[in-house]
Image (cartoon, rainbow, N blue to C red; front, top):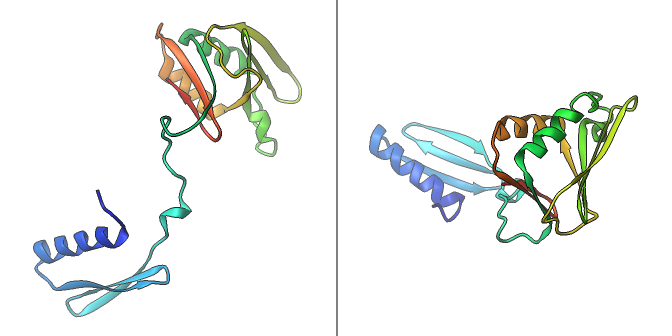
Length: 167
């Protein structure tokens, strides 16, 4: 939509000119600040380069590491059976997640809070890229549980270098 930040602010300035009927312009667009001059005043605003923010996930451009297809109720079973075993200690973030390991014939999931542990294997078809592990944080697993609901549709879990997708 906008080619760059300067183009975006030009559009904003034109809107200000049109609706507020005052003169406005942008000056000194450098050093992480830009200055808006309007009527009889001026304001200085900071901005951050888009390189400072994470990029959007695009599954078509990423290299998939592995993929697993299973009934959505299987994920619901995994989350429900591990919710009493996932830790709450923020000083141990890896214990605040469910670990999924992709095997050649299915999935293995584990969760622990350092006092009790659950570890089970589930048979699943369509596993590609065995041996990869995926940590699903507690908050994400709760959101997935709500999204899955009572659906009987197959669920596809795909992992990429820095992302995971659930379809």
